[in-house]
Image (tube, rainbow over all chains, first blue to last red; front, top):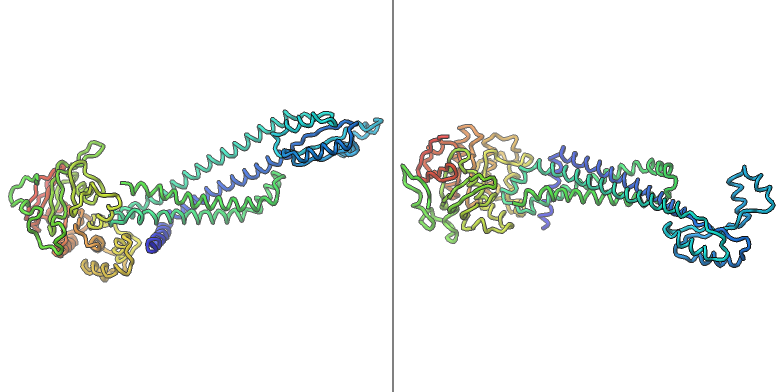
Length: 293
Length: 260
């Protein structure tokens, strides 16, 4: 068994080094495809982070009656805070609402100051875990006595949910298609490398090598190509990490900075797994047609 | 049993299975190395390569397989090494029915055959010694156990001095000797040479033939497919002639005149 593994590894290494051009071509293809794949994954992670951020921005705003009892409002705030759909509740008093308004629209100060009383209502601003829960929370609020009315943003929320859904599905679709193309190209490159050594396989068959002795060196070789390809890709990504993070932060504005560490680790794992996996699969499929007779 | 149109010489049926041939070291081993009975090989394309071939090769024989291109010589060899399977009929190698062989036993039966080709089929990056050792290496044997066997066959083919050279540094004749050494290292029951002199000039061809004769004298059964009429005629060995997938002649001490 040890002799067999040693033989297979030695043959795999010899296969790689003696077929330099083919090995370089296979590894280069691997790097190119893995870089494409990881670029896409990073882009989609950014997109997803953006979508999550947008989702969290969905706020239910309940305007309160001027006559509302502060204690009742306090109870309502607590009740809302305990709802599973709700991430955050904040109370905005009439004075605060005025200040916020003036801060946003300094030009309108004249008009407001000319009014005898502050026309802006106090409100509760509720952040949701998932915008799909908008209606539940809005309905609940409408039934509460301190609530005057709930800002109706149903249409906006629905549109947003649809757009986010399309973007997510599209992202996954593109990832799947690119993944299949990557798989196809790498498997074919490895197949070329194996076909270029049909003589060697034939010699092994003729001298009575068992299938395992023919197959495993090639599978190890595929795994080595995958491993090298993955390491080179990860190295390249690491070099590009700074610029990429910069672009992500600039372009998407919203990508949480701390996410990049886990994103980097995830991408590295995906690259490594995909590289070695496809290398092995490609070799296995390519060698199979020579063994089944 | 043999569909030969015997003409000028005594037919080979005088040596059938069980008949006294050359003495064997191991009495349990069958005396017949290869037996083909009513073998037909047709391909899905409709091409029929062999039609009802009967051929028995007893241990220790030296047999020339001759015939024009496309007569079926290569098909016979492919069936014997079980690269392909007969459509009809039985192929027995060393008593084993190749059609009933399990997949995992195929490599084992191939180790009973040593085969060389016109184009040598050596691994270009391995030395002569490593090319020969490779045949044992792929059987899973540890290296120290097969060094003596490798040295022995290199002595037989006269390549001890070139053992560390690469095939590219050798002449055609030396490359073919390397291939012969590799084919011998398993102690094969049957040695098959498929046009072994096809790429060699006449002088070197004779050296290779002399080597095959010597291997035969050491007790190895030899089946040689060839176009080389001069060699066949000079050696007066058993000749099996194929034409259009049939054996048209099977005689000992025979001559061969190419008609193609």
